[in-house]
Image (spheres, helix red, strand yellow):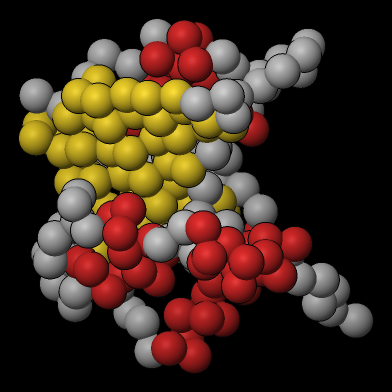
Length: 177
């Protein structure tokens, strides 16, 4: 019998929408016709808005290590008739060609791996010259090897255009020159 477990994030979407507006976050970065990546897409909270923003001539790579989340996303895409998203079950983005991406979103992914430097290098590698990325983490506490402080997080990147942090989060906007 097929496992019909729904990832917990799917259940939090209604509440999440009260605090995060994907269009407000993405609109400054994403235009029609772009090639974009939703790194750590989960079941598609940002993927579907990205697909609308890039339009029919754009492309969204949706990447997540959780096969169940990708299945939920693919079901949503099929039901909505969205054809400009390619989904991948993967822990990394090393299959994406260098210098090929206009915009990359990586929301709270680097704080879920021990491969911080490698992941940051991959994010910068795939961006086109002129490409941008919005990368966030949850600030880690304690001895978990996945934990990052804001300073450690900032030190991972070469192309920081803007950055910020709070007690619980840190973020960067990258702009590859």
